[in-house]
Each structure stands twice: as C-alpha cells, then as structure tokens.
Image 1: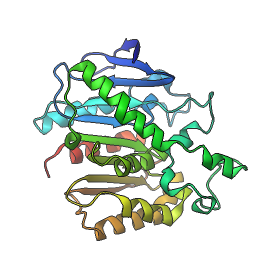
Image 2: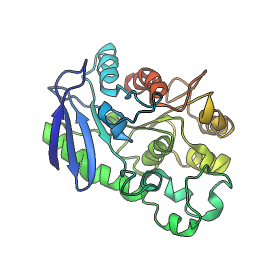
Image 3: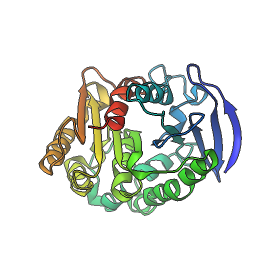
Image 4: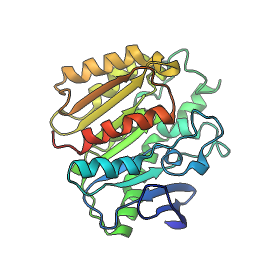
Length: 284
C-alpha cells in the first residue's frame, strides 16, 4: 500500500487518505479511534473526492458517505465506521474494466445469461468478453489485501459481523455478489439501483437464491422511478419477492425502497445513504 496524498472533506473531521495497491486507487477515512464497523464501497472515486467527478451536473455530487455514516452512527450511539472507497479500473485503461469487475461472474459467464438488450455493456465479441470477467479476483483482492492492509494501518480489528459492502448500478450487483462470494467476510449488502437488466429476471432469481440464509446477513436494495432506474421495476420486484419468500423480513434483515422521482445518479443515491446506513448500523 502506497500513500498518494491526504485531503480534507468539508464537514468531515480528520483527513481522507488516498492510497494505491498496485494500479488500484483507494480512498479511506477512519475516526481518530476506530470502532468495530467497516464499510467498503465500490466506485470509490464517487465517494469522497469531487475532483474525480465529471462535468455532468447529475453526477457532480459525491455520496457524502463518511459524513452520513458519522451522523447515523452517533444516532445509534456507535463509533463511526471506517469507510473504504475502492476505485474501479479507469476507463482510459479499459473502457469495460468496471463492467468486468462488477458483473456477477458466477451467474453471467455464458452468452445466454445476458439479456438480448444489455444497453451496450459488452462488445460484439461476447465470448472473449465473458472470458475476461474478473469479479471474483476483484473481490478476493478487496478481502485479502485492501481491507486487511487499511485496518492494520489504522489499528482496527476487522469483525465480519459489523461489515458492509455497498455499490450502485453495476456496483449494486457487485455488492450483493460480494456477500454471496464472501459471506464470512461481509455481513450486509447495501445495493443501490442494482443493474438487473443485464440478465433480467433470471439474474435476480440467481442472486436472491444464492444470498446467505436469513438470520445471518442483511440486504438493503433500492431503485428510482426515473430514466434507467424505471427499467429495473420488474426484476427488482421479483428479487424482493424471492428474498422475502426465503424468510428475509422487511425492516429486520431486509429493506427495499423505491424512491419516487429518483434517478440513476450520485445525487439520488446520496439521498438513500442515511436510510441504508441506519438499516445497517441499527440493532434491528
């Protein structure tokens, strides 16, 4: 782990650290005296640092994740969680790198697993693309190198039962998939606008059936009603129905929200954050 810089975020005490693991950039923030909770977020470039955000006004906002986490932790009488934002592969290096890292590879490794219309996520040479899916390795790097290195650096003992994995869109799928792949490392999946349409109802069915047994983990899912998020309604409703049928209980170990007029944007997802974090950090 090589430290690149430290920077300040308005309203957040202490510094955010920008580090690198090989070619992978990671931002992280921790309270002065870390507690037990650790929150790992996909698309880490959108979490803390506005310098990473493009000029599109709908994407200019960050998630304000650490500020919300500190506030919600205080309401639950807890030490704020350590927040780790793991960047995806830059588009200039591989314009499909993010898709390869966040696709639930176990369930999307055949041509027929992909919806006929997948909104341009994969190229014409589908078989070559499928052979390059590397979500499993990406998750392994997070749990075996990135999180242990950071928690050791700040003197925090990692406790799987107080951990969460978060993401939006393709990252929302990756959050669910990460808990499926590493149920002994991650306790809660916080999935914002999971991008079901790459695999449709079959993908929703596969992920919900593979999610850990009820009583051991938590799952939070959401979608908006505008734009791309509106296309998620059918598979998201199916996913919610299936996970409830397995014994997950709304408000206890499951939370699903449909945000009226919510869009596929950082600004919308930031609006979800307090509710999602309260669901994770509460004792319910």
